[in-house]
Amino acid sequence: MSDDTSKKLTDFQAAQNANTKGPLALLIQITHAAQAKTFPLDSDDFLTENKGQVSGLGGSNLKKILGEHGISQILASEGGRTSRGNMGLMLKYIDFLNAWHTEGSLDLKLIEDFWADQIRGYFSNQPFVLVSDTSQTVASNLEDLFGQAQKRQHQNPGTQYAGAILQHLVAAKLSLVLPEGAFEIHGAFVADSPTNRSGDFVIGATIIHCTTAPGEPLIKKCKANLDAGCLPIIITIYDRTKTAYDLASDAGLSGRIEIWDIQQFLSTNINEHGLFDAEKKNTMLADIIAKYNAIIEEAETDPSLRIEYEARK
Image (cartoon, rainbow, N blue to C red; front, side, top):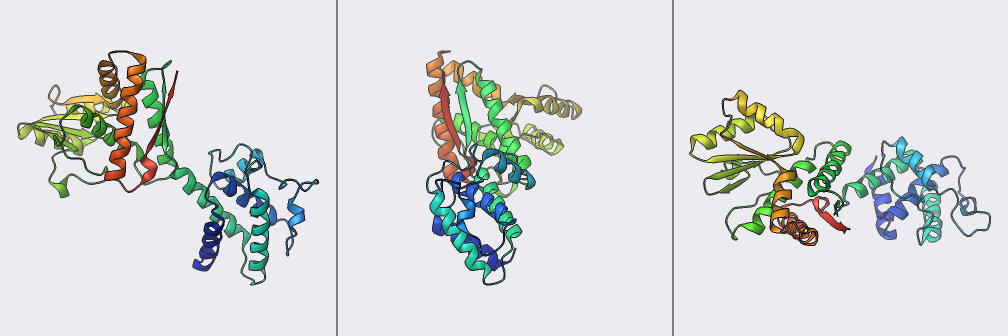
């Protein structure tokens, strides 16, 4: 896509404040429908018979279009049909496309690609959601959270959302139980070596390593920790604990490295400090998420790592 095309669309989007799901759903559907019409476009062709709504908008239509762009998430179940301001936005968009067409450089397929990219960005910038459902265990609630992170990683290759969430949840929990200044907090993507750290968290002679994918390099770090007289702890996700144990065993370090899964690490602490009371448990979990979000704001540049907390009874 040329810089000129991108600028035209970005300027229109900014002028119309078309950054939320309703406007984005409308714009990509109108663009898709316009490809079967001739220019200049007639705005009446995009209205229902009673002229009361924009025609052609719907959840199934939107799902089909997004599917063609490899997007499986549901942007708007109504396809943007019930969003306020649809009529005005549609009229402005038709005028915008008609004016652009007179310049001779209009490419609706490229424009549709642009809106698809904006929708991908919308999904990527949404916070994760942790639902504290008292009918389920804390570990189960956390498992769902990491499932969201892994799904987003699949949709946005190259960004390790799950690893960042794991590390900062550990930091949040430690911050609530240890004195201020007991350890340093770094960005999740800051390597250990440039900061002369022996792990993600150094607390006295204890070194904590956070990872969703334990491997041989991590075990070598743990061995270096042991050689330095320190106790290494690996905190990972539940289904990777066996991998960590096997790697430690292969390296002759069985029984010398603590290996915990993040779900039980948090669940045990939350239940103990909440005195095994459901309401207090929710309060403890809410406190951890609040601290986590504060850490994200301070240590990271990606606001999409935030977690929205929702308590259910």
